[in-house]
Length: 377
Image 1 (cartoon, rainbow, N blue to C red):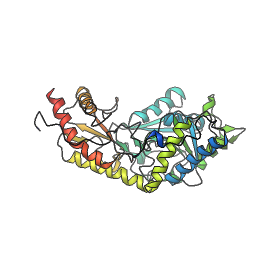
Image 2: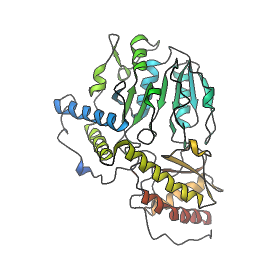
Image 3: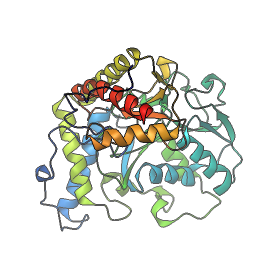
Image 4: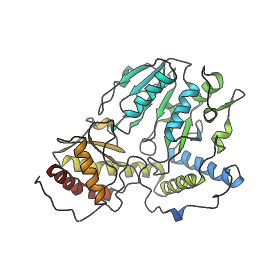
């Protein structure tokens, strides 16, 4: 590569490659959102109807069985996962699996906040721990798709059907992008701002029957904030899973999520979403394969993310990556593609379903240009 390259002729039409909040669905404009519920109570008939409709659409798009409940909760994916930890952990020993920043966050909370002394399985960025060594007599915490490392669980084969403990999956960058084996998942959490390209502030909590049993038969030793309380008089607060949210939701964010879910349905539902994400990841793979200065942080394709794809850059340090990201943003060719602050210096490019494959393809020459210009600076 020469030190100077011409500015590419073609830009991505939508240069939104952020790993959260992610690109809006194609065709989105704020004018397309339904507004009848704006200014109305979320507990009004129309408010509860729209919340239930969002839940119904999520169930359909996720192919979620009737055995599992879906609730809209505060605090994005973080709030949903914290809610699950604080309400259900402590009944059994805990294993926490960490191969990226958010998994480490759950370890920290388990150790320092809940003080439950978990068994911790770790792997460096780009690697996956040996999942076959997990002791399933314990409750197990893990991120299905490591957003900051680009490493994911390859499948659900490592989770036994006859497990004694509960499986807690932070699935925020995985749902709507992979086939999730729901019979292996007792608790799953995600947020709308990832694969749906929705707005932040709201989390989604999915509970299987074993998780409900835990909630109804176990009382944690620590006090629970109001926004975490899922049980009333020893029984699950079923209203939470029928659109009766614990606290006041943004109905504008709800309508935004409904738009994304209806778009997802129009392109073939879960299968259509997965196909788009697969195509985007394949296009980026081609870009990487054609350049000797780019590589994948996740070495094993079987556990490589197809949504938050993390790339290594030859000779890069944090300063070079910042220069590249700034150059690309300045040209409106790519937004927010610097790697996560705790990860090794590199690029992170979102390839979820709301991104168009043509934009991923168009990104390749721009990466060449930015790398050459940043190196020459």
